[in-house]
Image 1: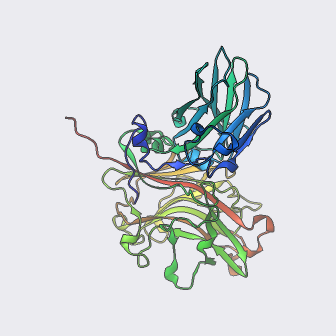
Image 2: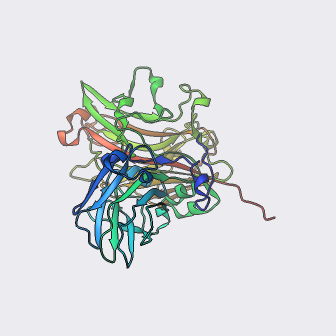
Image 3: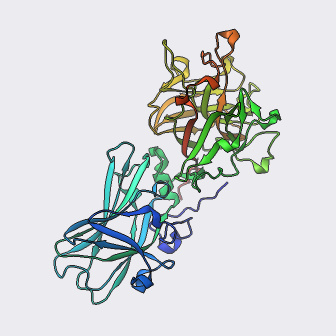
Amino acid sequence: MKNIIALLFIYSFSLLSLLGVANESFESSTGGWASTAPASSLIATVADGAPAAAITEGKSCLKLISDTGGTWCQLAVNQELLPSIKGSDALSFDLYVPEGVLPTNGWAKLQVRLFGGQGDIAAFDMTHDVELALNEAEGRTCHVEWQYVANEKFDTNCNWAHIGLVKIASGGTMSPLYIDNVKFKQSEAGATMNSTDGFLLGAEWGLLWNDEFNGAKDSAPAEHWRAGAIWKKDGTWRDATLSRDEAYLDGKGNLVMRTRYEGGKRLAPYLATSEKGTYPKDKSITFGPGENGIFIEWRANVSQFKAYAAWFALWLYSDTPYTGDPAKGSEIDVMEYVPFQNDAYSLMNIFNAAVHIANGGPTSASPPRPYGHTKFDAEQWHTWGLHWTKDRQVFYLDGKPYWVNTKNVSTDDTHGLRMTIEIANGDPEKGNKNSWGHAVGKFEDNPESRLPSYAYIDYVRVYKKHPAQRAK
């Protein structure tokens, strides 16, 4: 497991640099910035005329020019930093202002703008002002830091977010300006603030383990996500051929899980952090409620998961889940999505949650809704959470509890995380119904509009509650 260093943002920059900094200097991220008329932006080196003092990282920097001058101008926008924005809590960069480029009187500032949302209209639009001193005798470099996550407007539940650079002055012109050494930072305090669930903001909670799915486009997920169900030896599970290649990173901070029909095979990914009899304990990642409780949260999107006969699930599975004894483990289904609709009913905007300590029967627990299903908007991003203590499990949707379960709550610590796509064709002898009781026919008979199908996971985070501190 990853150990998160517990530091607060009020500590010095030198301490923050120890916290897993995501560097975005202009040596590697120049392609993401675009100028917006009437401004120009370009990569500059000393050979191009950039002042040597403007380059604080590498061999180049970003040169910002306002072509028409004036009192307001958006100089540049970067639309490719979403994973860094969502996975961090502060933005920093170095700003160099050459001598004689500011107005001779009045005021001037560079404004950092962060805006984003889920739909076409921005759900938040916030700015950080960098006041610039006029009449500097020589060029000046200043270090800018903005803890944007502290702004109550910021919402991490966004699927797009842009950074803009704006110059504002009371009059005259203020160009060129130079910026370099752009960085996003993440501290444990920031990671907690990014959660959708308010009670996690307390000092008694800390991040225990997480995967933000950052990485290069098309790369495989981290090795702690191992192939599951391989105990069958033949590479299949139910009616699918399991393929870890169907799970890959999109390069934007998301894991893509895909299912398709290719080469006569129904391909599906099945990822697990543990599996008894397959992976040794020291190579596995498992969880239980412990003495004080944990909170597990996924953020996912199933808007492109529409294949009949398939289902997508976020869940936990212990070493011995079906003994009938909750103390020895269980299957905990935090979210199962089974797209299906016919003339009688639809499951396209409903998900399932349940707890099992035996194969079916009265030992199962599910929310007090028909068939255990809970409505949600399947076209949007959502968070699914589980607050798990020794005597209860509280299930969350988008930061709000919708089910408190006290039946057969496991106290076992061998529960591994699972993210899976499974396929079960309908049985012709049973009216083409599958194991869910839906007349789905065969997976491969889905129309082209439903295959391939995709599910996206933004992150999985596990928080641990620390023991109560005695008063001194």
